[in-house]
Image 1 (tube, one colour):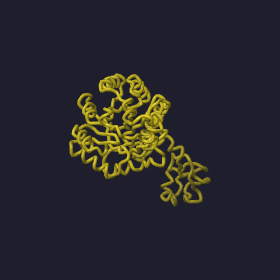
Image 2 (cartoon, helix red, strand yellow):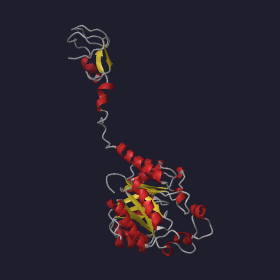
Image 3 (tube, one colour):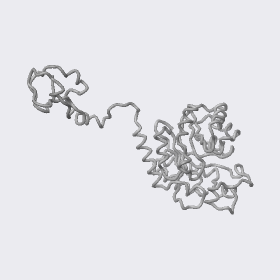
Image 4 (cartoon, helix red, strand yellow):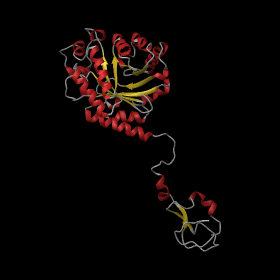
Length: 336
């Protein structure tokens, strides 16, 4: 994370438990221009109880015949696979990240893989032991806030900071945890509210269909954008349907980079590219008709026309009433 928007291509569990598919996702992220590709690291039996129901979107994408625990068992990779994925990301020149969903996984990512950034998912924002553990690492933290209100965000930030994480090392992502998120539920202005309320860097984790909302988030000041992607939305699994396909991911990142450039410095002054148009588009004080030397310059014999290479019309009152220093033909620039 630095001066430009940090774009995370969220592979999540879209590898469907297959290491080779995960590597293909890394390739797609690299080709799209992402800064990081992120997976999810978890031990199924540490995360989900045998009695946990599926979310509605999970029922729609994977069916009711299996439990949530059975579903995520099919979507996990062993710790050794993440070591291999990290090395593969290094070879491809993209940052490897992964979200832990349990404390053993968090310790593995921090101690064994030595990740410089730990992402806390929305579901863990009220998990005090998890927040305390990650807070003690003292590394950069990205905190997703789906389903949370301001009070819960404040409590999570307090736990992180009390346990050793600096405020300036935390980026809070506005997020809506519905897959896909309806446009009317995005509430993108809440990202600005979070930034103003807690004086932290903010970003946006997107689950909408399409690429418009993350681009708009950049225009509103997001420093981090996270978006799910897949090789093919028709693949089996809970998250593919709400993910971007490779060409869409590339289009989103290209648009983000363009918006990033377009935001500029915030200083209002003529740009380098428009400087040459100033004399063409602006106007100067010119003779409305023939003027003889010594004639008093007035509203009747002066007007303003292009080009803007003569006296600026902003000096109108200064010129009115002066004697003409010489003869002027119609449309000739007034000069002294």
